[in-house]
Image 1 (cartoon, rainbow, N blue to C red):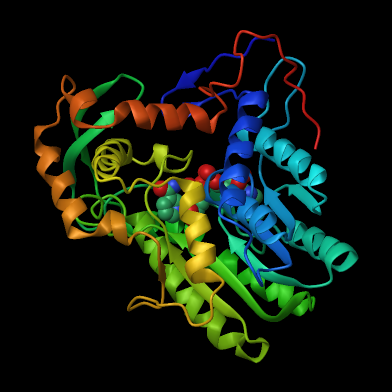
Image 2 (cartoon, rainbow, N blue to C red; image 1 turned 60 degrees about the vertical axis):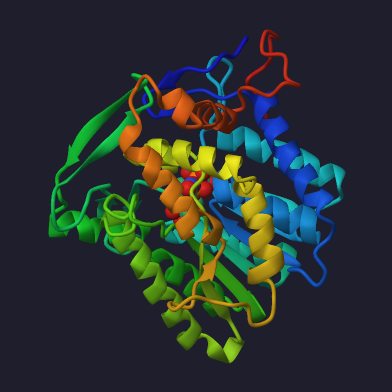
Length: 392
Ligand code: NAD
């Protein structure tokens, strides 16, 4: 079939296998161009390995450090008539590239929140890898079923405390307009913490430790976004921010509980980038477009792979890395510095639907958005008839 993007609201409902493969190759080339990571991890588990920051983590571990990688993701397989999800094709492409490079890879497509998924992963580690020395927790999900109670929880993207009125960009209608977001109630806050907080990260580490598949000195990181005043009302100080605060609690508890193993748990704060998760958050497409414009003008723009490559090489895998007041690793300091933020704040009140393409980097945002689904790569012929099927 000839595959063209089908965008519905903040999501693209199809994906291009050759484009996703091009995207994975570009990230691999970038990591390889940075040279190899000395004394890096050998056996790496990436939870949320198929897109965004998790995929970049897997690529950096495999092609930077030569690590064996085991991944978990939740993706849709293609059929003869319908494409798979981008994460499916990214994983197929990653497998191909890893195979050619002689690197071990295995991926489980299933619900990482479940007990069953954890025991499948543990079986594979025992069979193939022995022990894991790096665990990356990069799940982004709107829902989670508690594996013990069976109760399903849904997260909410709402302010906390009071109503918030701000500008947003409606990506489906192409207009900048004001929105008023009602504050979350306590249930909504608690449910968001249940889905995106630290509980499942802790359950993973507990299960891996009990199965004796964590190496001495194992490192683990979950990812967060902290941001600044422009995004605090809808992110940092909002429901999702409460869940992210719970990651800080979880990392402290992991460091205390597994000190006998020499485990080091970090929450790593990364910059805002276009991913499937971030494009679903109100205000973020507008903020990211303006921030991209400012950071590109200043020559300090970075995407997912540059961020993770920097995180691994300069912070996460180093002895005693510098941490902030909450013991987090910070890769977001260029985005959040006052100079960059003041430039974004100066543009913010002036943005209208008409001048948005000039004042913001909406073209760059849109291009990155389409690339998430494998569209817009110069080296891919999008007129060509291509099979949507791709095996792992
Ligand atoms: P993403 O949507 O690109 O990736 C989410 C991953 O989770 C995918 O691999 C998906 O398959 C997997 N997944 C979702 N539900 C699952 C389930 N039930 N079982 C197994 N796998 C499942 O998201 P992302 O933006 O890369 O986010 C990853 C992490 O990085 C999140 O914690 C997010 O908050 C954080 N982060 C994102 C940004 C940003 O701007 N995108 C910035 C800083 C931090």
